[in-house]
Length: 120
Image (tube, rainbow, N blue to C red; front, side, top):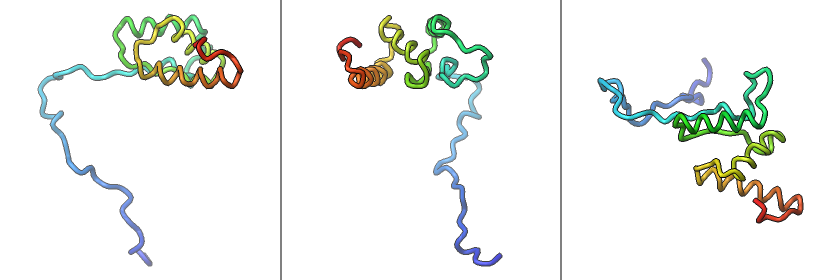
C-alpha cells in the first residue's frame, strides 16, 4: 500500500479498562431508567397518542417510579406544544431543570407572539 504513513488508527481504547461489574455477584443498586415513550418521534404507533393519552401515560410513568422521562420538543408539533404547556400549567413536572428549559422556550415564544411573559 502506497503512502501508508498518513493513515492513522481511527479508534482508540478507553484510558482505563474497567470490568468490575463482571465480578459482582449481585446488583447493589437499581439502574437509572429513562422512558422515551412520550417523545414526538415515536413512529411505532399507527395512531399517535392524543394529548389526554399522553397526560395519562405520563402520570402512569410517574406512579410506577420513573425519575427521568423524555418528552417531545415543543416546537415539533402542536400536540407536543400543548403537552408541554399542560405539564407546566397543571404542575405535573417535578424536575426543576426540565421545567426551566421548557419555561424558557415558552417565554421566548410568548415574546415572539407578543403575549404576556408572566402568563407562563
